[in-house]
Length: 328
Image (spheres, rainbow, N blue to C red):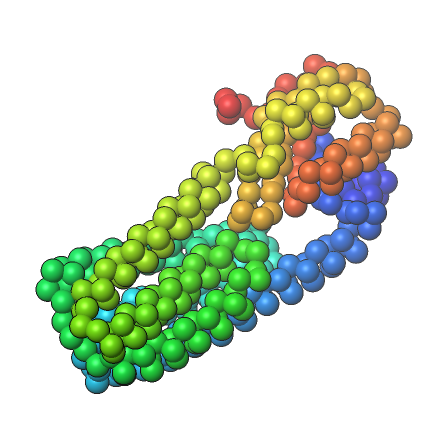
C-alpha cells in the first residue's frame, strides 16, 4: 500500500504527509524545492556577508575620522555601526545555516534560525537607537563644534558604503534580510543627516542641528523596529499567518467528499515565509484504495492552492478514537 500512495508518506497510524508537488514526483519536488531554497539562502547569506564586511570596515574608518574631526556625531555613528556589525555577523551566520536540510534534532530544518537572527538584529537595533537618543538629546542643550569639512568627506563615503549594502539586501524577501536592511537604512539616513548638518555647519554656526536631526531619524527608525517586532512575534508564537484563514480552509476541507469533520487543525509559519498545516480528518466511511487516492489528490490540490510549504493530516475512520489527547 505504501508504494501505491505516490507523493505521500503513509504509516500504520494513517498519517499522510503532503507537500506541494505541482505535478512532480516526491523526489523531483524535493530536489527542486531544496535547490530553490539553497539558492535563495545562499544569495541572501552572500548579501549579508557583503554588508557585514562593508559595515565593519567603515566602522574603523568612522572611529578614526570622528577622533580627527572632533565630531561626536560621527563617533556616535561609529558606535552605532559597531553594534550593527555584531548584528550583521549574527544575521550572516543564521542566514547561512537557515537553508540547511533537516537533521535528527531539527526535523523541520533550519529555517527558523533566520527568524532568530532577525530577532537578535532587532534587539541590537533597538538598543543602539536608544543609546543614540540618550546621547543626542543632551547635546541639543550643550552643542559642540567640529570640523565640518572632514564631516562632509566622511558623510559622503558613509552614504555610498551603506547605500550599496542596503541596495543588495533590499531585493531579498526573508525577514532576516529585511531587518538587516533596516539597520542599513538607519545608517544611510544617519549619514545623510550628518552630511546635511556638516554642510550647514560649514556655512553657519548652528551646532545644535546635528543632535536634533539625529533624534528625528532615530525616532523614525524606532517606528520601523516596532513594525518588525509586530511581524515577528506572531511567527514566534505560531499564530495563523494574516493572509490565511484557518476557518475558511477547514470549511473547504469539510466540503470534500467523504470528509465528515475536521479537528485539531493548525496553521503556522516556520520563518514568515514557509507555512505549515496540520489537521485530523474524520471520514464518513472506510475508503478503498481508489477513494483514498482521490481524497489525497483533493487535499493536495487544496494545499497547493493556499501555498502551503508542508502539510500533515491524520485520517480517522468512523468509530476510531482520536489519538491526540491534548485539548485545543
